[in-house]
Length: 88
Image 1 (tube, rainbow, N blue to C red):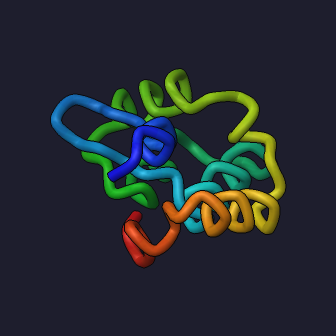
Image 2: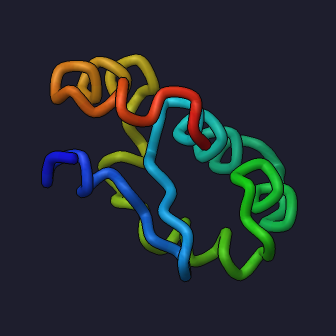
Image 3: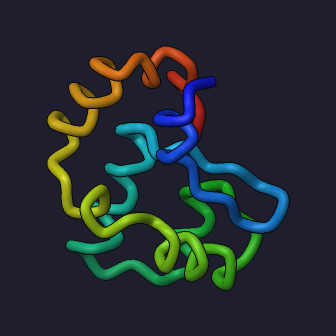
């Protein structure tokens, strides 16, 4: 895996979450709609709301606010998307 692709991973404890377009969609939903950290954690496959909170603290803000289609294009261009397609 390239170093560039590793930059798009958020490490929470022993879990590594790659910021796929699907994950970014969940982040956008959390940002724009009423959603508890418990629900956010469940949608990301995390165990506790504390892990969800850590995820929000660690995801780069420039990614968090990027439109999903632009993020998908960037990952495709850098060759990262096919490495993690279908993972959440």
